[in-house]
Image 1 (cartoon, one colour):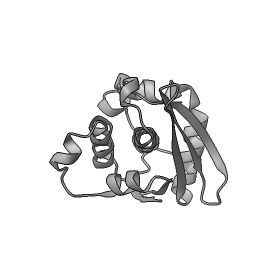
Image 2: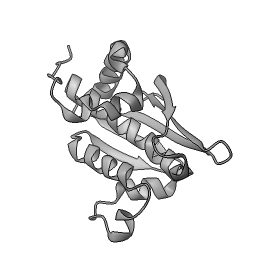
Image 3: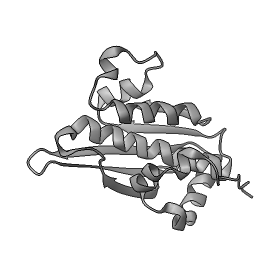
Image 4: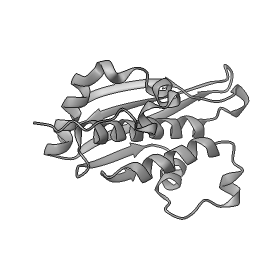
Length: 168
């Protein structure tokens, strides 16, 4: 039996940005339960990707979560936040990372899976290296157009207790 932890006041779960990022996933408790059970019984695998259309000035991301055998458990996608002039392929990729980290935090808070293991796959080496870097942010990163999303990535990583590996 999974232990349900109170989530009512968790700012990273209730903030409107995250509700917009993933949509109303409260109706998807069957997916969350299935993923929590998979995470407890073995590692889970998450894959994310981003896409940018410079002609239409749009960007989006997608993600999929699989169990330790590689069976897909849930997938989703969404638009990338930002002004059209600020959208780029890197921002799309890190929105994908942001989405899967948020899903992991939601699982951790709702189903107490803090000891679980997860591997995140992303096909953008710069995004993986940036998100995996444990050193403090430097001035070059702080003036980057994608700094806002990067800061959110770092805050989610700090909040997570799950054993996390990111790979390219």
